[in-house]
Image (cartoon, rainbow, N blue to C red; front, side, top):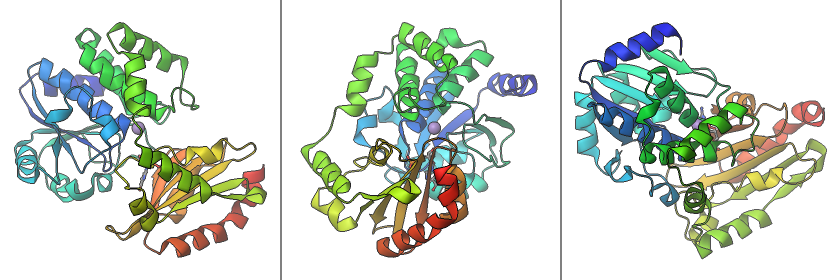
Length: 338
Ligand code: 5GP
Ligand code: MN
């Protein structure tokens, strides 16, 4: 954030605001961690802040302090609409174009509130009075820490805030291993631990709460894995029937795509997951090195994200989507092998 932005934020927060904080649709650890961290801070300085999530999110994120106050737009529709109607200031966190807010998009488009965007994805759109966008950041949670530092407010980091921000940094850095993890990230995390983030408990809450059926679903996914050595590519499919068979719960497929990248020499890993209710195939892309899956998702699957982690979707059937995907690979052969 530049000094003008900092002055603008300080000015906005110097008067009472009705604040709504929005994570992206299908929020992940970084989206929930950052919205909760910011919400705790804003309420502690006397503002009135509420989180409205476009839809539900995985059970392994629901232990975070303040979770119970998050309004799910699908389940608490009236309350959520009222909060948005009253809003004078809206923070959008961990996304950068309003289409990522799912069903909330039209309400955000027509809102009179001022917007502040805090996000680390590529190509931000221009809807906010303050746009704090930085693609070099590990996570939006690290940016919330910076945001509080810019406001001279790191003394306001409570144990609850520390837990929330630690969680998002942990999940978005793949447990501190992605390239976006810097020495600064570790310094922020160190400070969060000093402020009370209990790292062992957080890791346990996020990663060690598997159900037997989730492990079986992982087995099914790994069985379906196809390795295309000549393109250094691996892909996995999961049909709706397979998800049903293993009693799929939201969040169960989190991290499955990463298994492909653990194979020696593989640069590009993809998972295709059928969603019959929405009539789409949801796709996650991951890469190692210089192959930009952000660009790949943008070019071919109406998506986006980061250079090494992105997502998209397809309206075709699972079989057709996979066929289309395979047909694209020859044009990337050189890049994938360089
Ligand atoms: P995931 O594959 O874990 O759902 O998402 C990986 C990254 O890509 C995240 O940063 C997420 O925000 C982004 N992403 C996932 N799906 C989409 C999508 O449909 N559109 C865009 N623009 N980004 C996405
Ligand atoms: Mn993020």
